Length: 524
Image 1: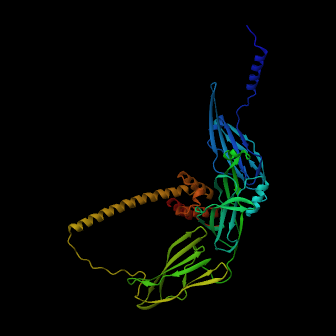
Image 2: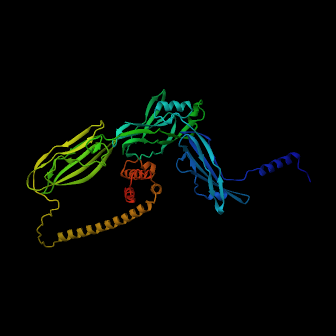
């Protein structure tokens, strides 16, 4: 029998030793960097093995970090020499909330068979950014280039920073780009609980090439909102964040390097904006604050009914809580004010509201009747009270009462003919159709009521999460819906504004009001 040569024995020994020192499979959590720029992204990788790989979700404790969306998940299964092994990898993308220390973990895992394992926390140092508190494009660009970062950033601007409470402020977030951006999306939507908001449509805005501090960059507005301060005092428009995927060239000196590169995810955040809302100056109460006009139609009486006067306030102001115009002198008639619809015209630059009322005057006697002047007091942006006025009008009228019954009509008996029978049959078919529609409407109302009861939770955060899950289950992105210019977008923004205000304890509202706004969203 031949003995193994020394060289072959050495190979067997090395292979045996290599297999002996192979590490055993273990759960692990890692990050791609330990030092993080304030506007950079962090990749967190959580690896689960065997009994822990059956977990569908893991609670990831974070401090001074915010996760951008759900994680990407990959699973592996291996069968070697009769032994199986499983592995599941969760990969999160996060960004820092502020400079200082950030922590990922500790993560406690509960696997099958009652196994419990705790992964140690990881500390990340978030570096301060000199341009983080600035909305000056040139200053931000210089800071990014000086620190070797990609020239892409977000700037927030307001058309005015000092207004009166209730006056309109238009805030625009503009993305500046001096690199190769593959795609971008809004990652952080600021909570504007100190304002009434009207989302403006910027989808038609075209990118512009400009020269900024000697560098050619592209700028495009990605969001514009008309804000109305709800109260006097200092208010802050929080920062908005954007996630972008940029292409970084591998070989800058190579002419073929234009076609090679790798995608890198970055996170950029605008600086907050400070808005100062001044109190309404002393004097008579005002209906609204802003550039507003008053329009009145000529009064008219039809068929002996009330004298009708259609009035409307329109302009750049928050007219949702505006008081109706009042008669300068009391009219010689009974008065009823009917609330009509309110419309919002959202252009690219601002939001214009129009609120309508109908004045019903019931004259006490026949003859000549004078409709007194109508007036409304408006506070202009210059801080001056303006008395809007519709002039008086005189017309001949007949006396009218609010609840006067209509005159009784005489009835004539007619012989039933074939045409009449066909008309009765058509009427019966119409009634049956109406009954079917009523049944369908009742069933839909029950379904909507059940959905509202299911989404209304004991606390505000639970209600917000339930509503977002309800939208996601129907293929609707809440982040896109909050910018959508539609009745559905209005309903969602109205509900989110109320929930955010309730969470901050800035308003008082019961479950009935929350349920009403949820119903508006479900039925939109």
